[in-house]
Image (cartoon, rainbow, N blue to C red):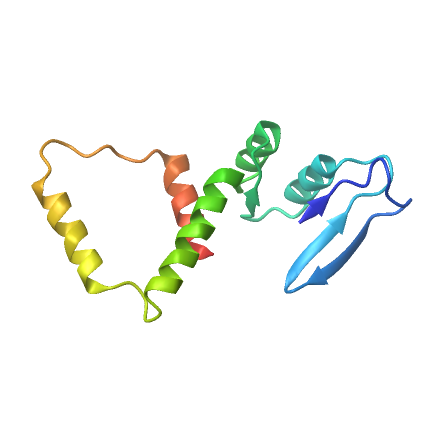
Length: 127
């Protein structure tokens, strides 16, 4: 997680780890967006970036990372929480069978996911 320190931060960038999550505070005069872009550019790997900022999302795609909008991420977390509460043993077989029945009864060609949609789906599956 990266937070702005550009108006009220210290003179240096600081970071700490809370519950397995690295929290970074940008230094005074530096926005969190700059820190995120620097990390994405310097540590070239596939990051999962949760942000609804278009500029950050564009930079993430350009550097080989996967941006997920905050609303989509929140929906994912809520669905995961609900599933954990309703079926502690994992997804039920009934749900899978119902999905197969629905898929089999449809006519016509199903809409294909775009490459970006597939990448977001794959990234969410990793969480």
